[in-house]
Length: 398
Image (cartoon, rainbow, N blue to C red; front, top):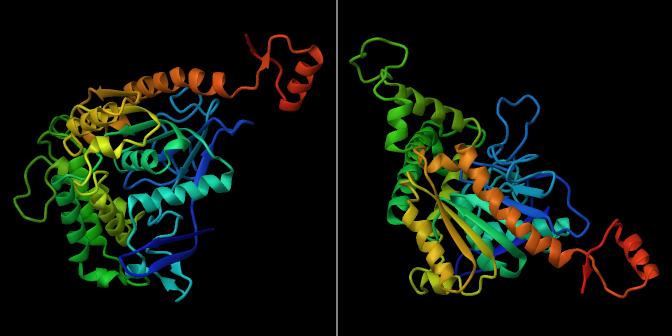
C-alpha cells in the first residue's frame, strides 16, 4: 500500500490513500542491488510478464524474452514488472474500492498521466530498496513509460530500451484511441462509468479492442494470416449477421476475450493518459530539449511494418537524444507482424536486446560496482574485504 497524491487540475490536490500496486519479480537481486531491470507493460498488459501461472493457458505476455538464456536472463537479472496506476489487474484503478464510499471509484477516480504512473513505480522501487536500475525496458505504451523514467529520474536509470513507441501521441494515435473510447461510452450499459454490480459495457469494450487490434497488425500480416479465407464455411452467408471471413472471426474472438480480463473505465483512463503524453510539453520544448537532462544510454527499437508507431517516430527520438551527445543506438526490426512484433519476434528481439545489455553489463556494472582492492594491499586487508563482502575473488586495480 503506497500513499500517493497528485494535482488533478489547477485546483486542489486529490489523493489516493494507500494505493495498491500489483507486481511480480523474476530472478534474484544481487547483494549490490545493481542488476534490477524494470519492465513496463503495454496498454492491455499487466504485471505477469513472464513464466506460467497455475491453471493458465498462456505464459506471461513477454515470455519470449524472459527466462534463463534469454535477453532478460533471470540467472543474471532481477526483473520487476508492475501493473500501472489506473489499471485493473491488481493496482489501484477505477474499479478499485474508494475507501471514502466503500464503492468502486468509477469516474471519481482522478485523471492520471504517464508521469503519475512512473512516480508510483518509483515508490515501488523505494519499497524494494532499489535506488538504481540497470535498465528500464518496454514497448508501445510501455516505451512511453521508459522515456518518462529517463526524464523524471535520469540519475536512476543506466540503460533504456524503448520499443515501438513515441515521445508524444500523434493525431492518428489519438484518433484511434478516441474511437475506442467512444465505442465504450456509447454502450448503454456504460452508465456513465457506474456499471459495477450491473451488466458491464461488454459490447463497447469489445469493439474498442477490435479497433485497437487492427492497428497492432499490418496489411501484409493480415494477408498472410487470413487472406480472404472463410471461417468454417464454403460460401458467403449473404446476410449482415454472419461472420464470413476468418479475419472477422479473429477480431470478434479477441474482442470478447478482452472483456473478460479488462475494465472499461481503465481503458478510458489509460488511453487518455497516452493521448496526453508529450515530452515536448505541447510544443513549448524541442524534443532535443526534452532529453537535455537524460543520463541514460539508449537502445531505441522500431519495427519496419508498424503503422501505429511508425519507425520515423523512433528515429526522431534517437536523433533528439543524440543531439545531447548521449550514447544512443537505433535499430529497426524487419518484420511483417506490425506493431505486435515486439511481442512475437523472439529471434530479433532476443538478439538485439541481449547484445545491448551484455555489452553494457561489463562496463556499467562489473567494473564500476564490484568491490576492489588496490595493488600493494596486505593479504590480511584483502581477506577482510572478501569476508565482509561475501566474495571469493577481487580484481586488482593498478
